[in-house]
Amino acid sequence: MRIRTAATAAGGTLALLTVLAPAAQADSHKGDTTFTSVTFSKTTVNVGVSAAQSLTVVATAKDGSGISGIYGGKLVSPDGRIAFPDSASCTRPSSTTMKCTWKYTLDANDTDDYADLKNSNAGTWHLDAEAAANDHDFYTLDTSKSVKVKRYAKLTATQVSPEPVVKGRP
Image (cartoon, rainbow, N blue to C red; front, side, top):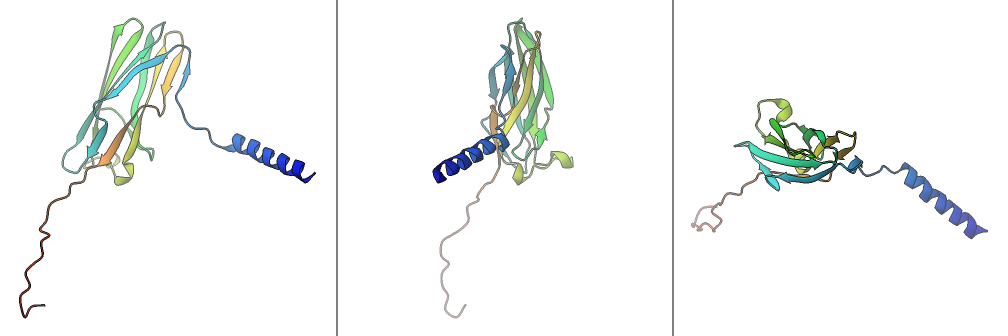
């Protein structure tokens, strides 16, 4: 009797945990729409205080009925900061595909308070974009395509040899 009660309690706890635990955010889609490629111009962006760093992202989406548009194209930091592109352009290589290019500038010393990057923004940033098809299919990139953003740091060489000892000086 005790074993049955313990097993029921354990099973009920597991069932409750699976219902209450938050689901991992993943890409979502409907139909045959896909992103055939997403590329970043850099795998790691080192943001320092002296110069802004640029990053280019190119995404290509495909659907049998054709792509009506690729929307979003924003970079999201681990702590939720959003970087919108400075410029965006899209072309149609074929009747069923669309290719978009977004250019971003990441700057730690920007005069706009919102654009200032902080140490807490370092980490894996991901691209949020959605491809919409003519037949109302879609594909949403949430977290699968990412780039590393690091705070640039440089060590400078200093003299580390021992100083000579002079008699009478502390």
